[in-house]
Image 1 (cartoon, rainbow, N blue to C red):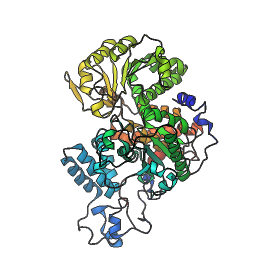
Image 2: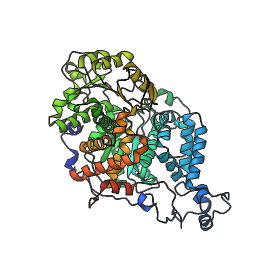
Image 3: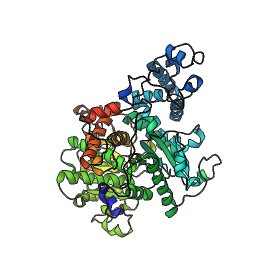
Image 4: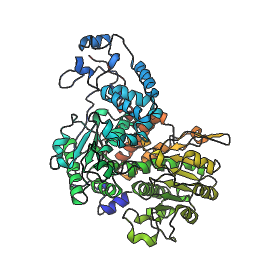
Length: 591
């Protein structure tokens, strides 16, 4: 991946430490959010000590009926609350019961967002303790519908909307956000939201959801997270003609106007928050995603979850699957349906991992990886007409214009779907893979569920229960011929929360491919023999915080090794240090 980016940035590496960059920043735990502060007394500061009605209206400090009698006396809450006292655990039980009464997932999503707006700690307590049940609500697939209807369900700002109207004064807009100690920014321009296309300003649901998971799954403090939508317009005619659309009603600019606006944004971010703030690009269109990652990789701490996060989590599944498939990565052949930012990003990271393990060149090992795009198999005869990020994958082969013929020509052991188009892995495709392999590896990664290349049931049924299956969206366990199969979910949520937390924890100032490999290997190591026995190549989400701590430690260790970590001295035990720095949602006692 880095080799591809180096070509785009004229040979400059992220480790060259561009003279355009300066080191600065440093963030303290202002609100007592980390695990290490759990037993300490906290003063509920706003601009003054929050008390009375204002305290109940502040989501960071509000505890509802969990305020003790002493706290009610000290903070002028008597009479403002019913007399009953509840523990946080009882509040959680009550709210989960309420949420489960809703039949429509979007209603559950709205209820959770409303909870976050009134009681932040209780929201994260619910999310952490019920992660497997609530993850599909706060993120894919429900977040896709939430984005489509974001204008209708919008209640109050959860992040910053920076539109072309703010050109020339983005720094001033950033200063309007009430928090100064920002560690992680997730930013989108809404042009390619999941598999749903251009949703413009309504794409804000994605940064909001991602950052909720940074906190719940990775342990990054909520106060240190900032969701941002860059609104440059939309090419979606339906939104442009919608009188209730909340964004700019104009076509998207391209070229210099667009990139100048993004450059002002990136410059303002570093100026306002320092060198060590992580900027995660999310759901940008392919043609912009690669350019932005290449341009700012040497001057900022940047990460693209669609390219790098997806690649890392898929690589972890592939590494883990070797225990079931046998052999090394270099002994397998991979075929991708989809050659956009996700597909090429995954392919590049696989080639890099194979190169390191096999001690061979990345260029040579790319020949083990084939990609199919909308025009068919990517081959050498098409090279002149290909986009730059597809050219490394153009190999010698006769032209083939459909997936089934590509399988017959390439004979892959693993089929990976990143097309964003549903139902592409047909019965004939799965049967062809099963005919070639005793245990075919099928990964249908496109989101949301409606866009998945096939379902888990189809993959197991059409391969007669022999496939090793993983998907991007969740599927229930499948019973086939008396055996229960548990499909894996190659969800970026395994990687990006722990990865980002590791960067923040060690004060990293650049992201290098070796850190992505470290994250993949750390995740693969969390798959146990018990999981393998059930056909799983990813560990259960129930253990996600432990998994994130190990990923964060692996990423931080690699950052120290590469010399891009600024937090010195290096902690002796990075896993324990990660756990101590993690945000915990348990209520604090107030003075």
